[in-house]
Image (cartoon, rainbow, N blue to C red; front, side, top):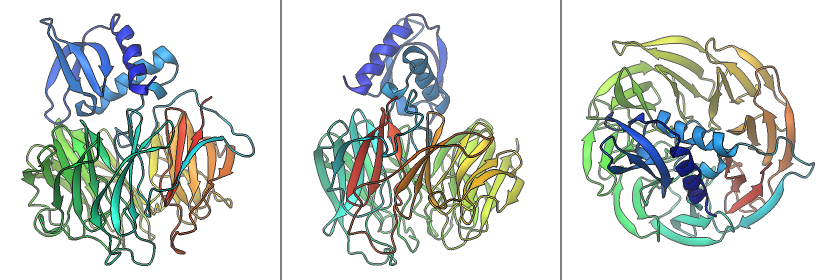
Length: 480
């Protein structure tokens, strides 16, 4: 049974006992009272007060609504894995936390069982998006940047579509070529960005191109030294991108046509940098939060107006995705910069709560669980940081926990060492480092640039763990 069918059955039986609740459309803020009937094909079926049945795309609902759907499935089945959809980098809520429950809480000495290996993903560091049993990623095959679609059950290729030529010039910078961005899925469409600025919208069924744009040619964008690396954000009917430059640092496009909806012309940041945009609501205003080298900004979802800005002393490259909780926003950068927490007041004034160098996160990401942050900090290894104070709670810098990327599933951190691909399972806990398992990704690419490392973030979904090193994608069974 496909995951989406399983969750549809779960939620349809639950719906009989649910009371009507208020649902919020993320893009417009429009609210409706309706009773949940079922979830099917990525859409929520709702019964309106007058008895009519409406359908709403899950991804178009507010983060609270999406979390409600996950929690209802979890209560019924004891596992949210069946409800799992991962349509974008760091998931539907942009937080890097898998909905899976009931996973293995320790591993045998040789690690979890391998399910399949795929060896044609191409060169690059693109991550994974997974919807309805299909995995989407990108890589350079030969000289062509290619979007790839796989069957998550078998690892077999469903389709592959080239979207641009990769001349490896102007962005590889000695660390290896290929795409850095993760594709995003929405309503039967897949959106992808290549390192030089090509934006492609493909049909998710067969990979055929629907439309394309170019961040430099169409929007006078400015890529950084390692190319364009943000992952596309879909919010309701729009695709949100940050081309950077001095004309409009952020743009909104109609996701189905590629037509321009608005340009954030007040925002002129120069280099686009590498952090992915986050959608949120602060002070009743739907907005997009983006980290640039010299500032963190909030841009109105309705018209692209700059709502607030906070200075940031980024150096060389700013990469990690910001973390938003209510009206507080956390950012971190590598190259000795550090991290800070800002608070947006009722008048849209951004104020620093604290700033320090406890978390100096290069590009492996930081994840917030409860009141604590988890991630790799340069020179400190894997750390736990207090959200409210910024103080370090604990750190571990052993051989395999010095630097890498993190993912969280079922109250455990999946910490991937970038140097040799060792994955360590660590309990999410503020009381100290508690290792629960460890194994090494195999196979690894003999074609990786000598300077390049295992930089693709791990992902757990539907009881499966996905790891990648360049052309190799390996799937493991981590069900409990």
